[in-house]
Image (tube, rainbow, N blue to C red; front, side, top):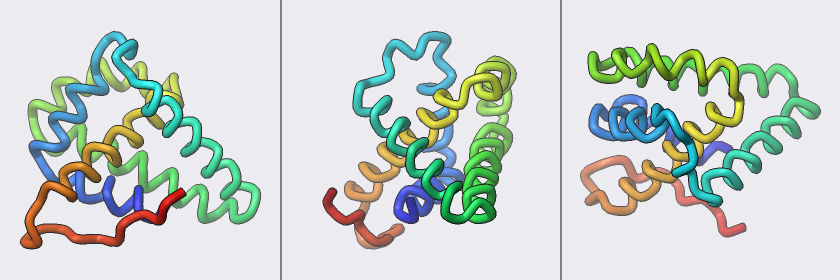
Length: 129
């Protein structure tokens, strides 16, 4: 979960990445969500649930950080803010959509990190499963 949070945090401050992610997630139909996205979202939810059992305070801080990051991505640029109106009703009523947003951010961020030269972020790589 640390790696994912690092990658997600980078996406929050990257205008191009944030707007692309918002466009993808704010689709009226999530039928374009891949099985990999759904699996990643389920795995994420399970990891957070395990964390809730072992360290409820840390789990709350973690989910608050994600929610704050999502909000920052939505409000930081005007294009994202306009998409927020349609997104918010869906996101707050559907935790899977929020988890899908997070997993897509990590996937897109991981790809962008791999494609980037050494001039940018070079955080730790996740361990193989």
